[in-house]
Amino acid sequence: MSHHPGIFKPLPAEYFRHPEEGGATNVETRLSRLPGYLTPNHQFFVRSHFDIPELKAADWQLTLTGDALSRSQSLNLHDLNQLPRVSVIRAIECAGNARACFARDFGRPAEGAQWGTGAVGVAEWSGVRLRDVLALAGLKEGAFHVRPEGLDSGRFARPLPIDKALADDTIIALAMNGEPLPIDHGFPARLVVSGWLGAASVKWLGRLEVSRHALDTYWNTQDYTLAGPDYPAKGEADGVPITTMPVMSMIELEDDARLPSGPTILRGRALSGEGQVTAVEYCLDDGKWQHATLHTPDIAGAWVCWSLHCDLSPGQHTISARATDNRGHQQPEQVSWNNHGCCYNAVTRVTFHIEDRRSK
View (cartoon, rainbow, N blue to C red):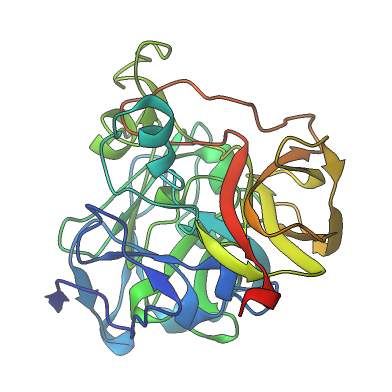
């Protein structure tokens, strides 16, 4: 097994933006270029913490171990393919999505890659339920944590509580949008943890440790936490470990985009962790909040596409958007500072320009 210090798939500027301080293994999707509900594999954002492993399907093994299992076991792809196959349409969103907005709102950047709102995507993930895999090794009563570990160069790992690990839609994915997992997205097997931060969906899965006690790692105690003046430390963590992602809307416009005058359709997407979006409201310039049109499908744990019609005068304009979910959560006007720049979900705003066609 070797490791590659970058991203394998082509990264045309038409589809991707490199976030500042993002490193060679991070790239975000230009949402304005998405053609439909699902994010095509070749347009899906990439977030990797370490160099990417080059693995052969024939040699891959998944090791199951820990004091909450009746026995240790090693499984290969053939073993997994004997289990019931399931498919889920779910979002994967980096906890740092929209991190660049902290610099805009607070006058200083939070640590980490300065993502816009494109560190998110929705795909159909196909594979097997994690609970069916754990059952092969005899899951004992009293299991508390499952710690998945990747085969990347740094062995990225982040624990799950047992109830989330056993959920219907927590799966080991072997395919993405009907194709074998691309190498950048975890080939040959990755976790997909519905509604949680993207870091929970460990790529290049190689090991599962199941324990009766906490299996904390750096990635849920010193990073991927909400830490700062408004977030007191919890247990071994420097703040509050992040689990479910908050309600958030995205606008499918590049900052400072230029649009021709006349009737225009503006579009966006909205999601809410494990929940379902029930409304998206928009405000143009200093106008009143109005309801955007939601389109099908609207899948809990994924996203909904929305749109609005407008006819604006030439000049600079601002569109604001806020989403509400089925649990009553709505995007706030402001968010509190956190040191790691995670879970930004204040009202989304984009400034754009309408150009007078007659001046051409």
